[in-house]
Image (cartoon, rainbow, N blue to C red):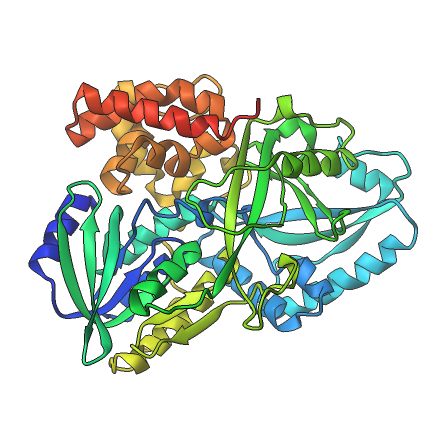
Length: 525
């Protein structure tokens, strides 16, 4: 089933009325809401001002986890909820979510029993949805699992399981799932206003960011799921609106897989700033991160601060045999977390601001969902649609997403995961047929990666990719895996896209120039 943005736009212009659920925001939460609402049979539309998961939802640590840190803080309810959702997601998207072993390396004798007890509690909270039991590892076992771990003073470790995934690929699959259940989903469609009827939010004004055309959509419920931009939409609803979220920046660095030397991850339970730090294998590279830096404003393309980069490199170097340097960083990316802010003023450090989500209804009936994380997106969506049923007086229909298979769902082995194309799950065969029909599309886009032209064609035809950034950052992840290499493959990818989209050479040149400028922000000097 080809998904055409232009056809969806034309459909919306012809059908401005009669929507049950209008979702603003195409990140994890908004896409989850669209899947939930559409799968319950509600007439659903989703509007995203940029590309799906362009912002926070493509810049995570790539973990589906309960949150060991929150357990240490005593937030048992949040951890239990997240662990249950982790188990469901592993079953519903097995092509993207995998069991990942994490090792807490112990350099003091007291650490092993201390962390072992904590991880047994973690296991227990997952209940029947647990994905694996934690174990105590000897020094020898730790070194076998992570050959490049620093061995000086190492006494052993504690191994536990959590989930690992590809965030923007999950977002794309959720978009496809929502579409398959009848939702109309559009990227590059910005909500610029909210219309009231009898003081109730009844319609949204929409601007097509490509054509400049504007139109209205009327619905029974409007849901604000815009993540870091949640307050912008609330300001359209209420002029004297007070901010509900506060930005916290998280930075990650991508380095070569040789820095770990194995398939297991390192979890540092307490860094110098009291946080946790991960060294996680991802697509044959390693993610180092993250930070938690309070900021004052939300931007679409945040940049890592020098002190954040230094902190990650120095902390990782305390646990790795080889100290990573700025020259080793293949890509550096920053994401802004929309943390639900406390109501009683400033609040202080971001680790004191709630990670749990907040769901509320404005006086106008506008529904807003804020906070949360990728792991709990499905639970957040279920609660949001349940509230929408009440607010919009929609017919009562039971949520089915606890067991709903996400587009592409396919059992995937560890061997299959060595090749990038595993992320396509059940769509792999269709991409293979594209390559067989046109052998030129089977050629690699870059000698360092497995990406092919067929995946670019697929991104345009089936995944609503509209720009070079859409493809290289969020469809094939090249920007996040190696920013310099992504720049090198940009002209070829732009040419393939132009042929698919019917664009001219000027469009290609503009796209390449724009993308290379963007990619420079992911490269450390």
